Image (cartoon, helix red, strand yellow):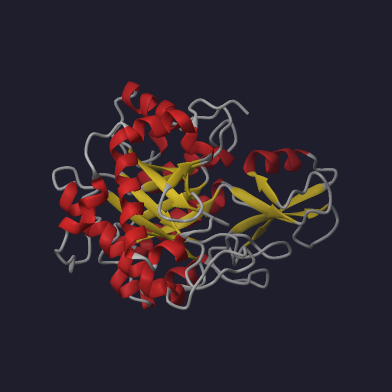
Length: 369
């Protein structure tokens, strides 16, 4: 796969900064005590993640924010960052934004599934200081609008074999507080966005009542909630669900997160049962469309309770592929507006089909055009 910007070039940009941000956190002492306002947006936020290195670039007409994946921690996890995946196309992305005179906010995601280092860094003030310094250098050299923290997950390594600690929840809050205070101090004239991605089903992983003081958005990953025969991202509960977007959002509201900071996740990919080469466990919407065309093998169904589509073998009833379509996204948009949520986030832009079926449905559902 062709790389448009090498890590070496990015490093050169970062090292070219003439100031030393290692002292930034030493100069910050103010306490951020108020919940950060996310209102005043001219449009309901549509936050699209962009992560693949293939020759795909986002269309800014369908989003207010693009979060580029990703930056990861270099070993031995001292706070140093390196760019991977879609972030290697950051210069090309920023050039596209400039040519289109776009006001879309460009944010860098740090972390992701299987990324180690957060636990080791968050517990050490010096490592946090170096991490923030690295974030600031990337913000300045790449002209970014903010940072998105995707720690999966504090205090719980799941099956990933990453470092974790019983103090992760507390350390995450302290780290986010330091990042916010540093950004507010240094970028006072051009405020930076700080967001966090959180588990669909475990608000208990986080100290939400304090975290909301420091972040603009809480991006709830309301997907990967089930694999066939269960749904990936059901809006409501049904016999084919383990969890739902509704129960997830309500759990975060109960944990103290204002609706105005909650962003509901919408997947542009699906989950299939993996039993043959067509039914890949992670399947893009464009691939699902190809399956639907094979109506001699597959039948598209709709779950009235969960408000999502799924595929079954022709003549059978068991869910073998859970996905989103324009109808399910329209229902999710109605829910977002009814609940007064901040907006929607998508994982990920590059899973849509070439016609932009899903992003068009999302824009129509939230922006009415």
